Amino acid sequence: MLDSQSALIEKINRLRRERGALILAHSYQSAEVQDIADLVGDSLELSRAAAREDRARCIIFCGVHFMAETARILRPERPVHMPDPNAGCPLADMITARELAELRKAHPEALVVTYVNSTAEIKAQSDVCCTSANAAQVVNSLPPDREIIFIPDRNLGGWVAEQTGRKNMVIWRGFCPTHNRILERDVQEARAAHPGALVVAHPECRPEVRKLADQIASTSGMVRFCRESPAREFIIGTEVGMVWRLGRECPGKRFYPVSELADCPNMKLTTLEKILWELEEMSHPVEVPAEVAERARRPLEKMVEILGT
Image (cartoon, rainbow, N blue to C red; front, side, top):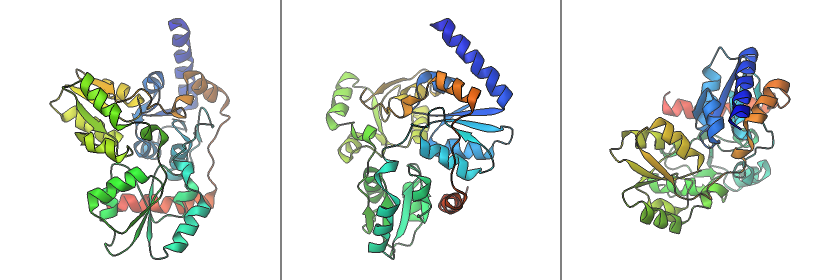
C-alpha cells in the first residue's frame, strides 16, 4: 500500500511540474490530499492565492465547486480544474437565483450580503460578499438604517446578528449539513473526555453549540487561535479534516474532533487517484459564463475594498 501510494505521489509530482500546476486544498480535505497540496487554506485564502500566483499555468482545486468558481472569477484567464466535478456544496445549493430575486423584490431597499459559500450565479445578484472570518466586519461597514439580506447560512447569519447587534437582518434558512450535525451533547461528551481542552467552534455551528465554545472562529481563525493560545489541547468544532491541518501547523499540541460525524462527504470525494487523473487528462475544467463572472466579481471586490486589503 505504501509503495503504491509513493508511486502515485511520484506521478503526481512529475505531472504537476510538466503542467505547471498549482495544487490547492481546502482544510476539510483528507490528510493525504492536504499533504500533496502546494497550499492548504480556507476557500477565500485559496482563491486569492490562485489569483496572485503568476508562475502556475493552471490550478488543480481540491475543494468543492463554488470554491473553484471563485478562483476562476478572480483570475478568469487561468484554467481551473477539479479532480471530481461532483464535489458540490449543499449549503451553496440551498438558495436559487429565483429565490434570491423574490427575496430582493420583497425587500427592495435591502443590501444583499452573501457568504462566499455560494454559487457564482448567487454572487452575481449580491451587493457584497463576506467570509466567516470577516462577516461581522462587512455587515458593520454597511449603513445601519439599511436592511440586510444575509444568505445563505442561517447559523453564520445569526452569529453575525449577535456580534453586530443588528436588528434589521433578513437571514436565509440555509445551513451547512456537516456543521449542523454537531450537537450540544457532542460538545458536552468531548469536554468530559478531554476536560483540559478548549472548545473552538466554527460560526456555521448551531447557536447552542456556539454558546458552549471557548472561542468561535473561521478555519483560518482557528489556526491563529490555536497557535497563539497557551493551551495544549483543543476540541475542534468543524469538519474533521481541520484536525489534520491544525496538527501540522501547531506542533506539540493535541486536537480532537468534537464529533467524527462532522465529515463532509463532498470534500472527501477528492482523492490522490483523481488528482492524478485530472493532471493526466485535464478533463474537468471549471467554467463560469463571462457575464456572470463579471457581475460576481464586483461583490468580491467590494468585500476586499471594505477590508482595506
